Image (cartoon, rainbow, N blue to C red; front, side, top):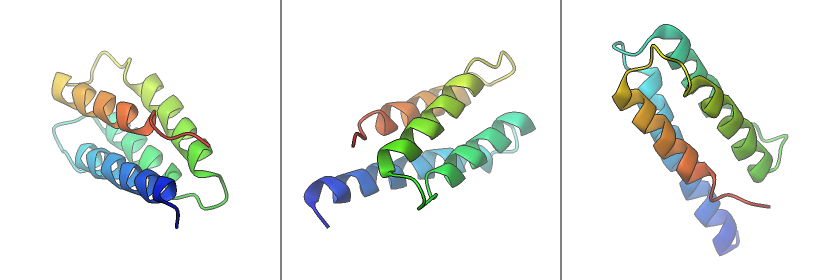
Length: 90
């Protein structure tokens, strides 16, 4: 593996850790937990390039980050995951 793909794999792992934290948090509304789980699953889709997986997850997370019912700490975690994923390019 090249150093860039190793770096991207680390970023994917980092984002998944944050998303799984949200998905497992019972104080976060169910629709937001479900979206975090979906985004985490998207990052594992081997049929797409790593940049496409990141872009798909970012799109889903940006949509859900507008939810007015989201606790601030969950929104902050989602922004954190988005910023990590934005570093991934083809």
